[in-house]
Amino acid sequence: MFDLSGRTALVTGAGQNAGAGIARALAAQGAAVAVNDLVPERAEAVSKEITAGGGTAVPIAFDVTDLAAVRDGVGRARAEFDRHIDILVHNAGIPADFGQGQFRTLDPSRWRAPVEINLFGAMNCLSTVIDEMCDAGWGRIVQISSGSARTGSDQGLSLYGAAKSGVEGFIRHVSQEVAPFGVTANTLALGLQTNAAGEHTAAIAARIPTRRLGTPEDVGAAAVYLASPEASWMTGQTLNLNGGSVTT
Ligand SMILES: NC(=O)c1ccc[n+]([C@@H]2O[C@H](COP(=O)([O-])OP(=O)(O)OC[C@H]3O[C@@H](n4cnc5c(N)ncnc54)[C@H](O)[C@@H]3O)[C@@H](O)[C@H]2O)c1
Picture 1 (tube, rainbow, N blue to C red):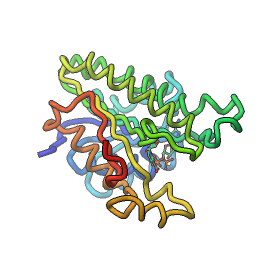
Picture 2 (picture 1 turned 45 degrees about the vertical axis):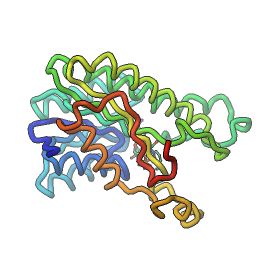
Picture 3 (picture 1 turned 180 degrees about the vertical axis):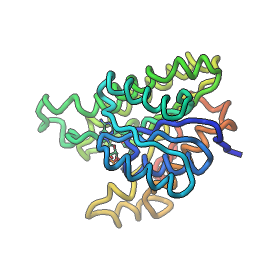
């Protein structure tokens, strides 16, 4: 099950943490993986790690918010693999200027960054790969989201939550349009990950029913399922991956 041999994948923001976990997991199932990151050294390091372990990967650095750069990057991946992209995982979602803070304190100049990377980033990447998926009659879109898309908090995440909500809605609609072509599109909504934990880590983890934060391996395994041939009847959904912290 979950054999991805012969498939190619593009994972954005895959130079560290959850994205790296997704890239490693897809490669372990046999996919050839284009490891994207804004920071070339990060993409190179993860790509090298995968190839050193016997997998197939290439580093493809670009900025997901720049449509021309996305098209160029996907073209490079296609040339490297001599195949179109079968699996897109849009994981990049935390911009350098995160826009975190109580909304009343945020200058309007900070409103766009979370929307650019999450929503326009998804549109840029998806629009670049979707036609070839539909033409081939097989494709998998996996969008990484967050519990903050649907659960409000007072943690200064309003812009981020708005961007994640927007991209969840976008994926839901696109999923209906591409389903007849054998292409699925789902969202994986993550709870707090080990890398994001700060001084309150222990207290946060203690409130999660599984008593721990999420790991790159947790995210990679869920992404493999959504990308797999076996998940062909799973589309238009948001899968919560959060240790049970929200159970709607
Ligand atoms: N960390 C968490 O607790 C958490 C919780 C819920 C959801 N998420 C979501 O999971 C995903 C991954 O989070 P993470 O904590 O692993 O992120 P991270 O910031 O640790 O890593 C993301 C990578 O994306 C790259 N990146 C940033 N901007 C980019 C751009 N414009 N183009 C290409 N690459 C870019 C960064 O260089 C970085 O290497 C994000 O979508 C995030 O919103 C994370």
